[in-house]
Image 1 (cartoon, rainbow, N blue to C red):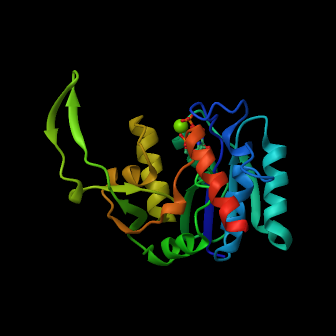
Image 2: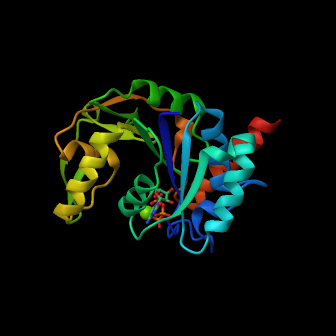
Image 3: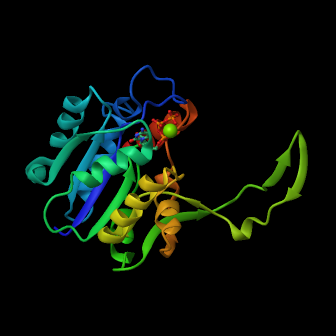
Length: 229
Ligand code: CTP
Ligand code: MG
């Protein structure tokens, strides 16, 4: 396939406080990483790079093989870095063959619908990146020193999810620029845009929420339990 999906799973999960790297924490019988990979392998055929926490490459490979089934030759595990950006860079370095489109996906968005992965892949062009995003529902305020200093017009805002998709050549060039500038960006779309590229957005989905806190893990457990009945 000329599409690759880099699944970043190398974070430690400080906010989840589960006593293990977040991607390896169980939701039900299966880990966050396993659920994420089940979604990835249910989507369009793609090369799959799992970026694992250092010391947990073997666990990640077992999850990859379980999710991939007879597509396991499409998968590879590499070791992540200290920041998400470094982990994505490690994934980019591991691409092989004639990949033209790269999707970067958070393992922590374990319940992302495969249709969202497909939609992002379809929307990437030779020049432009794509992010799935949801409208912001909360009333947002700009604050400083305990005071509300301004209202924020939420109609101008969107909450970005993953996978985020990019033309490979431009993404690699943008990563090289970020490394030489020594800048860490909040996500791949910001890094890609900082290099002068255009990023478009498509509709995200509620199920693509990121498991960050113990409450999020409860929500994922609830969603899986509800859909199993
Ligand atoms: N990630 C990564 N390498 C890092 C940091 C993060 O691959 N050095 C990945 C995580 O595994 C996750 C995704 O990036 O799938 C989004 O990061 P986040 O939700 O912040 O996960 P953690 O960094 O693990 O959590 P925390 O910030 O609470 O420690
Ligand atoms: Mg983090």
